[in-house]
Image (tube, rainbow, N blue to C red; front, side):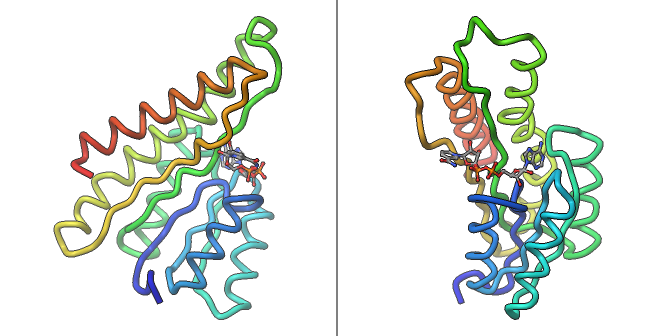
Length: 174
Ligand SMILES: NC(=O)c1ccc[n+]([C@@H]2O[C@H](COP(=O)([O-])OP(=O)(O)OC[C@H]3O[C@@H](n4cnc5c(N)ncnc54)[C@H](O)[C@@H]3O)[C@@H](O)[C@H]2O)c1
């Protein structure tokens, strides 16, 4: 099992790609933290993993809220003591031309795509660097596939995500 004894947190893993990523890590022996704004969906994924013989816990958390991210990582430390792998999966967009965006919509998409990564990396970074010194491995993964030429905005968000990810990795020595 490739990820036995590893603790993995997947944001937005109550559904979709995040759910599949979480289940794949669980199959490879990792203890998986299912974090999703939809607490019921998160719980159902963690129950599914446990029923299949894996290890998982679920937390309801909006990863664009610093308060909720702080609580989420405090729970991870309480439950597992540390974190090895963070999957920044949460992201969304509103498909319309950039000139039609309201300020609230713009803030929502930036918060969901980029602020969420900042908040999670800020909490996870020191934890994962500590594990690295102790022989653990450190990963930060961000989904930024699927450029869409129809909306200039989506491409902007993805470029922002990629820049943030690359900078964060560089500064953390990854
Ligand atoms: N589906 C695609 O074709 C596709 C293509 C390229 C990239 N992506 C990227 O992959 C990632 C996942 O996409 P998906 O299609 O699986 O999404 P999805 O909508 O199926 O699932 C997203 C999950 O994230 C949760 N979520 C949303 N906002 C949240 C928040 N603020 N805090 C915590 N949880 C939150 C939702 O409740 C949901 O469970 C996104 O970053 C998306 O941009 C998706």
